[in-house]
Amino acid sequence: MSRLIDRLPQPDKILDKKLIVLSKSRTGTFSMYQCFQMLGYKPYHMYECVMNGYTHMSLLNEALRNKYLGEGKPYDKADFDKWLANYDTVVEIPSYFVEEFIEYYPNAMFILTERDLGAWDKSLSHLVTTVTKACHSFPLNVVYRLDNQIAMFTDLNETFWQVIFHGRGLRAGMSLAQADYVKDGELIRQRVPKDRLLDVKLEDGFGWEEICPFLGVPIPKERYPRGNAPAEFDKLLGGFIGGRLAATAYKVVGSVVVSAIAIGAWYYTKQR
Image 1 (tube, rainbow, N blue to C red):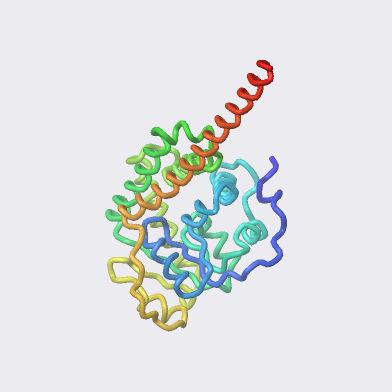
Image 2: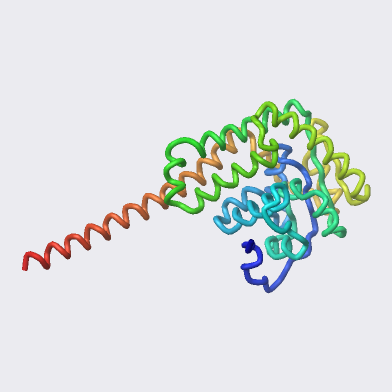
């Protein structure tokens, strides 16, 4: 099967990967995405993927389905380099490709943040139920037929459900997700050299004081960003969905106007 990544042009330049964040979703990754921007890095996070639109969401969907569901050739280093050429830092997405990113980018610095499993369970449950409910409810369950970005967003959500929860229901799947959480953390600590890994539990405190000395950069005067709380995530999700609904409405209204003009022109010529 032809892969999307193979059909994309080769980038003119591929940035070296300076920093790889192997943390799973809901472990402070959006705050890190924001903080790395403040420090002058060029970070790529799930939020950036969605905001970049159809192609980037499709690449992530393809990479996940090829690895976990066997739908095609898994991505290798050249594929990740092509996809992530414009970024020197990759956040959260590597948690789905732990072994690959450790092998492909040995000169990068790595960060792993974890949190209490009960707190992670609660936060992840909020995330998946919010997104899944939105994808299966009006207006997204109608608009996805009209907007390719909404369609890919809903497809990607289904893929994440298959990958994170092994295709099970939320409760049965969560126990498997927790097992993966523990297993991946152990693998990371075994594979990444200690001098290249910042290993932190959020409950012990995590901010500039932990990140900046590890990276060898000065601590900014600005406060460390505390993003991606449930309310902020809902706001971000609403912004994306609202923007796509507005774009779809514009297209629909535009097509109606064009059709009306065409019908009017036909009627006018018939009356002459």
